[in-house]
Amino acid sequence: MAMSRSARQAYKRALKEKKKRLRSHWLLIQKGDSAKEVVSKLFTQLCVLVLIGCGVVLTREFWLSFSAKKLNDTLSGLYSSAADLVSGITEGEMLPGAQKLLEINPDTVGYIRINGTEVDMPVVQGRDNDGYLKVSFDGTPNKAGTIFLDWRCQLAKKRSDNLVVYGHNQRDRTMFGSLKDYKHNIEHYKAHPNIMLNSNYTSDTYKIFAYFVTEVEPSQTVDGYVFDYHNYIDLSDRAVYDRFIENIQLRNEIITDVDVKYGDEFLTLSTCSNEFEPSRFVIFARKTRKGESPETDTSAARLNPSAKEPDWTVIFR
Figure 1: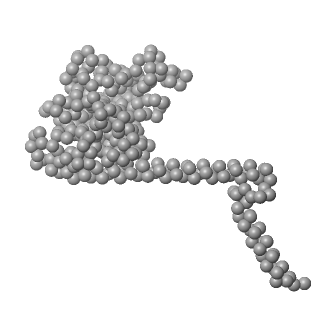
Figure 2: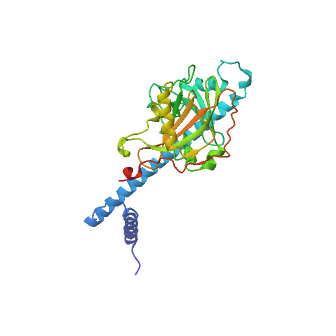
């Protein structure tokens, strides 16, 4: 028996409504749902919201990382192109690369580069050591921050005995994220033993002679003593200098032919480490002396089997 026209229309409407309910059944709470279905849908909705939130966070992280890399590449290219003019300037005159960077950020105090690595970027100096932790060189917010010189240090005219430079240990290897390659890797050191640090007026080479992971909190050590390397800026007092070098060599992960002596100028690179929280990975370099070759002989360099390591039993107790 054939269905009447009105019956067919009613059937189609019912079928359409059923399909509509089925499409939304897995997520939307509808009239007639049981208590179990309501709880299930609420849980599903929560999962969807969490998934969306994670997507937003990951997208933001990707964008911040991309932005940091793009900015670093731009600044590196800008500085390198201007560096071709260095041979044409007189002593005491500002480097062309510095002029370009200062136009973007007046806090620029120099430029740091480790050839063959991702360390190739400007150095700024703020009024404290917090201002550039989450701010890019161009002033935009970015958790990658900017490489910055300790606010107490002097890089221009009368240079500090020890220049302390900080940078985040970024997982994408921007900022000081690639310094981890030196850890327990003598071959990486042999391939990259020098650090170039330019002020706005001079270009200098520093020779790496030490690096290690160190504690931050007194509670992380057996005796409560933490080597506060970042506070050794003025080394004019011989006793202070001796204590500085003694603490470095006690922990030094490598043995090299790069010698140090009282009166030398030093560069310290500091970044967070991931062995424990909080921890720091620190690299120490000595400025090339007047008349000394900037080349570093690393043929005899080796790992130091006697280096003092962090107090693991205290840290992981």
